[in-house]
Image (cartoon, rainbow, N blue to C red; front, top):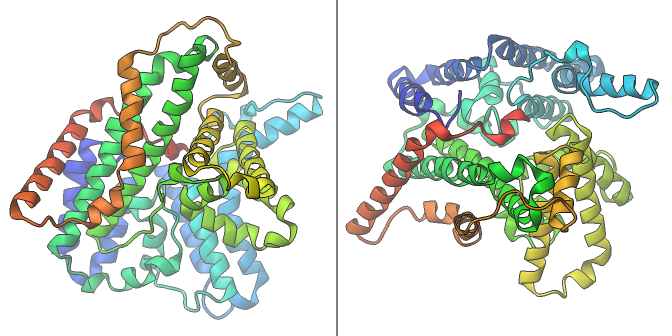
Length: 458
């Protein structure tokens, strides 16, 4: 089930909200858990079974009393979800490359035995939550195992199930425990509605609109031409940002309805002054997860270069089973290492130059998300003027789309706008409400032309 779907917005969500506030307060966790199972089950009952199996295995493997003393239990709790992730997401890639290596060639094709294995939506996200819970229990950060319904809800809660933010148990423990006491006020519900509205508008109007503008050019990267190539580089950068940011805003808004305060997953990353800062602002819950459960255990800054290369190669692999994703991760590692080595010179540049340079370097890296190696190389040649003559021109309207996306990205601070939810006058409140309602209506009108969220495939 998708957020950008009328069935979700006008059927599933109202029924879930109604049931949550109508049923006995003590059963609220079960209501949300059932709703989450229905939400995820729409992608396939076999996928639901995979998630539920992970929940059951980790929950019982981390039972009170013996878990902190049993390395076998800890190994099971960590390995079981990772093995499921490896099978569904990486088995074809791994075996295909082993087979290719044995034949003395290089290939990223999927091995035929795994061609029909369908990737459960969001498996990378809920796997990381299962693993973090198991590790935190082992470390003693979670001294008491929660009730099963509470744990299952933490893993499967539908607003953030498929594309984050990646949550830690400590971030939601108190909220889940106090669901029966939750009473929302009007300000909270207004903020929730505005998060959802701005998130859907970002996805449907900006991200999908940008994708439609780029479509004729992206289909033929070798004939993009210089201007067409640049349009794709920056257009896709805005598309993937507003697509993922839009999802995160909707997730935050949905969470607020039910009493949860999810962490911000984006901190205006395209305003970053350098590549290192970018990763403190982009997909922050993944960055902190990688830091706490991989970078620090590897030794952190004690072997900085090696560990940066490892964690960013792992970050790339987390995004997708392909060499293009691994190379993308290594590309960001090299950006950070280069910045670290030249920081004293970099910081002397004017602020706007630092921001423009960082944004451009990040944007060129996204080509490895959009294309395989061959097409990415073809588009890069087009940008450098070395490709075939341009097959499509970039119209003034297309550049206007880039300008509009830039304006929203760099000049509008969504979170600050939402937190300032009260105007000084009733007329101001009325105008704000009308603007939000119009924006939501506009997004809904374009639902039929909207696409699946990009990060659903991760």
